[in-house]
Image (cartoon, helix red, strand yellow):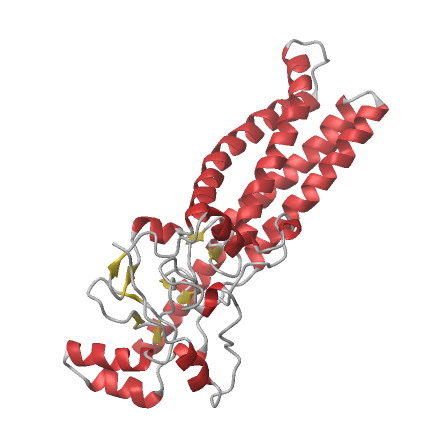
Length: 338
């Protein structure tokens, strides 16, 4: 009886948590809807008097609004990618691991299992990274998100404003969302400023539109300044080929920690996230390189590491019979420069 009550209470709390997690997204949606109404109706249709100016403002605004909304939708509803079943311990290995009381023996079990996987990062103690909650050996740059309750490939951070975990599958969309949010705010502020001055100096008659125009300027500038710092920080991360988590906790390789272990140079770092075709950089379609499980490292040459020359070397959908060969071909030695 008590166990059933506790389980029901736990499910209720999880349900409430899921509902409340959408509150920040709802706030953003309400602000955007208000900005759309205030700009289209109160500014363009009520305040602006010249037809050509009115039409120009509306056309450009809707173009910016659509690309901004598209990127935000992709950032919110693109699910983060998880490790495949190849990183999941088998039943026999899991039983051995759980029954083993010696920590060193547990590390050895994980090390044996990881030999057939393209995993080169380690814990601070040098052990293979393992998630006790998901029961998987963590791929490089993968971390467990306590909010999502699962391991996320190339996890950057969990963003409450999109109610999603930002990682390999949606990091480009998050970057574009920040960029087009800034453009949206900047366009509104620059076109509203003229009428802000006219209302402020009482050259236009007071009315309901005045309130909306004044607040449009203040809100758009406030969001623009906030987004500018966040976008600048993530541009620096992309240029250094780091995630937010790696900026605070240096990744550890088989021979020790190296904060620049994934740094391939600015140009190649950018293509890792945005893709090789620059014409697709500014469109919210997935173009990031690789598979999310393995990443090229700066200390391994192309002749040693096929990841640098062929991004799709490791197919997570390969059959079990094909896996040993593919794992063996990716068994490389990493040498970290000091």
